[in-house]
Length: 294
Length: 228
Image (tube, rainbow over all chains, first blue to last red; front, side, top):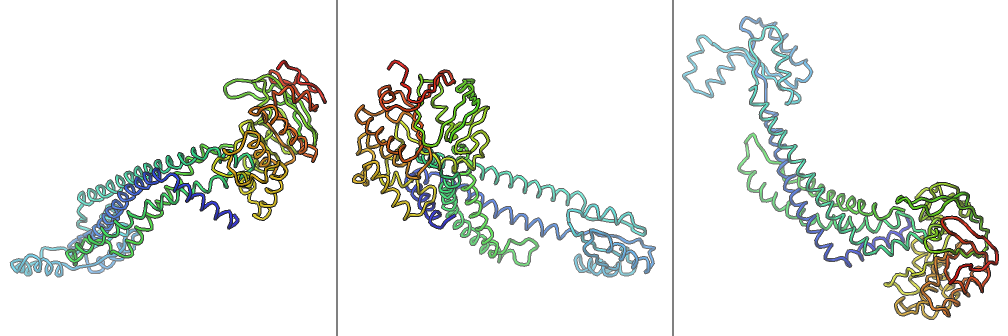
């Protein structure tokens, strides 16, 4: 496209926004509300994901070695487990170390057991994909010289199911909201097109290409989307600043952490802007298609 | 220039507008299309610039196959054809100059060429002095002359006019016909659908009469042939 033509298209698209200022206002507000909701949703979802990941990564399998296992057996077990596919790391801890840990956690009364330690030697195993923990545990329990395998079965699955369900519901809600905003932009562009029907008719009669007719409307839709994303970007950035300022000092040292303000907020802003552009362009594309059939 | 072989057109609502039309029009001809309302004249005209497609049969305009031309190529066809309507189809927000220039701007002509061409055609239709006026400030005849200027500014090979004098008083109609004659003398093929008996009978040209989707008469220098 020639630069002159592009300039013309841009000028036309702005003119049209000015001419339909009320409709523009209406659809920009709708996009604003939608993207604001989407933005807050993204904040929540991404942080939930982070929390889920933190929790997931904390899940480990506790493998109890049989009491009658020799030292060689333990060494060979260790290599067998760490060579399994899906195992990220193994950590061996002798029954003496286990007891020391217990004493540390529960107090000196337990040091009585130092006479005759009732504990097992233990491997702590982490799965590469925490969601696969159950399968890895199953595989390990099939090995020889294993007394027992524990990974908090049941509880973990419930946690994962809950988090997955949350993610899916969030995604569906976001998609529904985006669809609504797209529909509103599409309606605004339709009104613009109807108002300029005669102009389009003449353009087509004298041999303007379809793209020449389309581009100003697509640009108009894009401006609407961009304008609708500005306030949400600002508000979401402010909101998250407040949240991180409040929460991060209080969460320091805890297992659960929020995502850091930067670069996360740049990513979210870019995402909101992109969604604005996308729904604007797609919305206008949808309504032009109906009108420009040759 | 224009060839039609067994052109048949049936609309989705079941109406058969053209029922096997055969016609050939040479470059530079002046042709009247006459016939009662609903005979198929408009469909015939609309096919020339691919507003409608034939349901079957063959049709060529300037060697472009109208039956199979891709949508994307239609603009190229239309740049070869100027179209004039009974209701002028001018943009009321643009002045005379802008209305004519519009046709060149949207096909991305160079600005310098646009200016030169627009002034030339406005001179030709006798409206150079009204270039800055708006359509609503002009008489019907003047508005039609603007639309004619717009249709020829791109120097098309064919000019198609659908009832161009339908909204004009007889005297103004003659002025418009005078303009058509001059455009035709310059080599442009003109195809004009009309109900104006007086014009057809006075300015003698080829007359094609369509009735019930068929050509019932095709006479060079013929008369209108219907009661006014």
